Amino acid sequence: MIRDIAPPLQGSKSKISASDPNSSIFLTDSPKDIKNKINKHAFNGGKETIEEYHAKGGDCEVDVSFQYLRSLMDDAQRFEHIRQNYSLRKLLTDELKKILIELLQELVGQHQEQRKEVTLDVVRQFMTRRQLHFHY
Image (cartoon, rainbow, N blue to C red; front, side):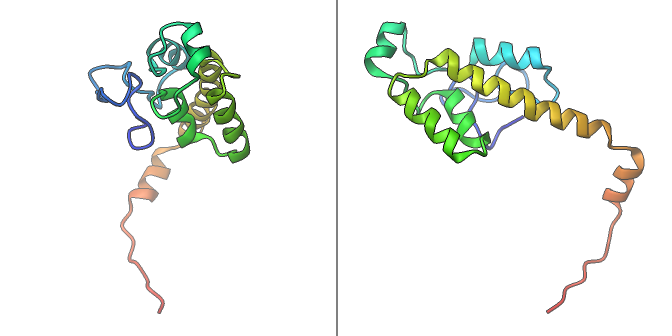
């Protein structure tokens, strides 16, 4: 789970729970799972209508998709562009979610591919105790 870098999908007032598979993105989620979870469960700040959004803009402080992007996006210039456009009502919530879905699908997919390469020998080597050598 992405516990320490982003809030629960339902917003900061809820909790990430292993018993609620829709409260977070898991590293075992399929691309379809990621898309469904973000589209259906990612709290967007409580704007009820598109008219209200156009009047007030996106609230970056409470929008879960934005919070995830803040934690995961490594392109600071692109992130700032997204923040400005979302705050100024030039980027809709659905478009913000689409950006997050694509990023999460890529990151989780990379993790899953790399995990396939881990063999029992790799685990044994990693878990073998080694003496630390300090050089002062």
